[in-house]
Length: 241
Image 1 (cartoon, rainbow, N blue to C red):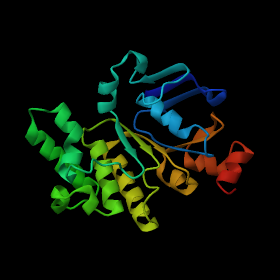
Image 2: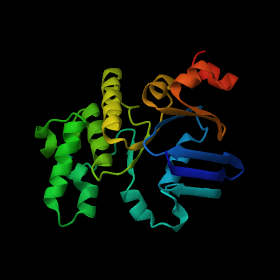
Image 3: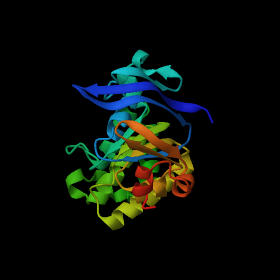
Image 4: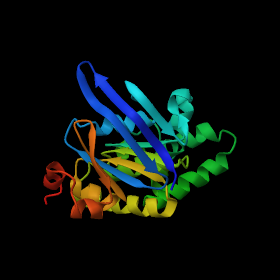
């Protein structure tokens, strides 16, 4: 499989603190990569570099063979889905308007195409059609998170970035959302990068797991291989081996 995202000798420094240190990584098309590591290890920083929300101090981020330094940031972000903890929906927009927000920007004259996209993703994330006219304040936490995922996917991006998206929901809802996301990945073959602090979640969801510590990669492999052959003592402790 070809690389859809490449980090080429990436470093990120805040003041005197080096958060990412000379990192090189290729992510293949269609992978579900879960990113796990200690707090402050650079997980979220790495994720946000892909859509240009954080700029690296040195090195290059390449998406679909293009250096993002040479790309229009607005266009780049419109073509990459982004879902974070709590979903951060627009409170003054209905569920339908929230999900349709980016498709409306991309398909200004094709309202029917946008309506079909909204309906499609409502069904895929397990939301009833009757919720379309409701506002975020009228939804449960799990419903809000589902709307956030549907909104991130509604423009049919081929890359989805997720930063601890299920951290604010209860355990039962979390498991349901994990199962829905696995089904979405299997159906769409979209490339997903999913930051989590939960090793069980990382091992359950990822086709590959990226373990980070202090801005460096300790291991990048399938969950099975990491379970069987942890690369370092840190990884062994992390997985409880």
